[in-house]
Length: 395
Figure (cartoon, rainbow, N blue to C red):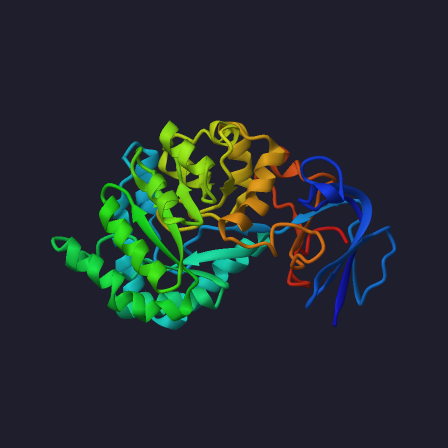
């Protein structure tokens, strides 16, 4: 057993109200004792003894970010597409095809290296737990390869064969859905925990999406849905109907969507970096929260509509443009992400939680938004092990 103490913490966010003050369970002037095997051991007065020690020097510690929606395994980029959008071109779902072409052509070693680099970038941004999707091969062997690579990065790998119609099936959508639900699913299921579908005009309609989710559920996978990104539609209510853990994007939510979500265990996961990158309107998170909807924030790291792991920017956009308080946004990016993955071991720093924490080079967590865009993660701890330290941060 190896223990780590983060000592002399000015503010510790636990995300457990019974452990501290306010909605985030804040504690002041404490030490946090962590263990590789047993997770969070104790919150103690300063001076805790452990095998390894980090002196926080009055800085703040928060739970590691839980990024519940990413696409880290791909080749190529779409910078020209982004530049065109900034000049006024509309966003369309079909841009995924360019990444499919590049990913299919890449060898496995290159894809593994690219994905590992993106995962490390996310650690530098404070993301200690991540969900990773496939979806950029759209054929049986390619999706199986991407799912296997995603599973090397996380316990929460997701099969997304239903990301877009494969180019060779463009005029045969029902045949492709049958492939996704049959041979492709069988090739991928052993590597993943989840199945996802892009329920959107230009991708898969509600009946096709229901077929994909039903096949995944029958195969023992949990359900996720890309829903209501480009317009109001059936995706959110389908997610609730099917018992999905999360409906993601939720840029356009009707009263009926909110009623369905508020009476369910389905989390509405907002992806504001995507709305920024695609010049879409930001979702009204205030309206959703006031309606009793459980919400999360995620980055949607991908080459076409959100090539960033900057969760702090997602927080800033949520506070500035989506009507969330800072406390709500921080909770959504930590324990909210955990709920979207139906996990109780991450997103919090109380007894029994996994030892995932980030030390910020700041006295309070609000500096994540206050000092917009600054690299404030001084150290990231995952599973009780220091996995990143900023060489320029003070000791």
